[in-house]
Length: 279
Image (cartoon, rainbow, N blue to C red; front, side, top):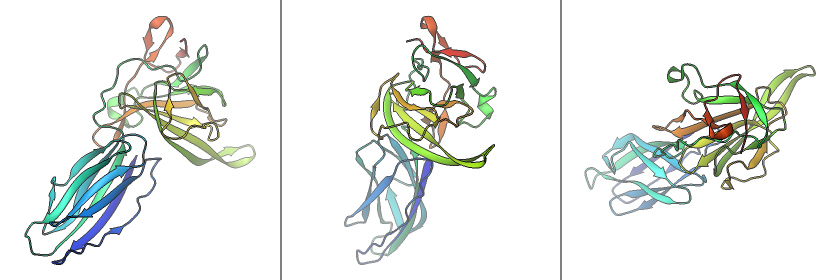
């Protein structure tokens, strides 16, 4: 979940700065980051703000520096809370009176790196009273597998089944993706929706293979645990994909978790297990 952007500038003896800005590519539903510069006597100050309804982390680094110093020294990472503008860094001439030129780049990851996962169990992500089988559990060698998906599960639910929030939080992003599938009618163009919910502890629940027309909630909406917010896509052959993630060192990693079970117990999701939503 990253965006990358590069910016170039030059300053001569007269206070004249030119910025060339290239819009970052939209990457897997991540939010936008805005950078604003403000000229001061010694050089520009740079401020960042996000239009994303959850926390973002950005890393800034210089790719060119001629007679330039920064405060704080780059590379540096900045945490941007939703709805706030944060001072990122300032630029000035290392040898005052001489011209300077610079280029910098940044990348963005969703999520708060300070998140401390709450060990409380997650609700099964479907309506109370229903039972569905786990199609895939955690990777048997999670430490060596893809950290993004190591602790993910698939729940074998029929298309159209209501999907509920496993934990309360803010719906931060939705992303509809197109794909092709071979059917008896030939190759068909299909779509699937992915939804991310940032929990109160800073972790994030990721739900995929959803019906693209089933969610009427906008990013920024608070979703309660157990609340229906979408339905499984009709073409989701592998059922609902669910994982819990956090931003760890500017990358998204999945986390082990437990589901709440009958009688106040908790379970680790294992392939073949029948999961019962009893609440």
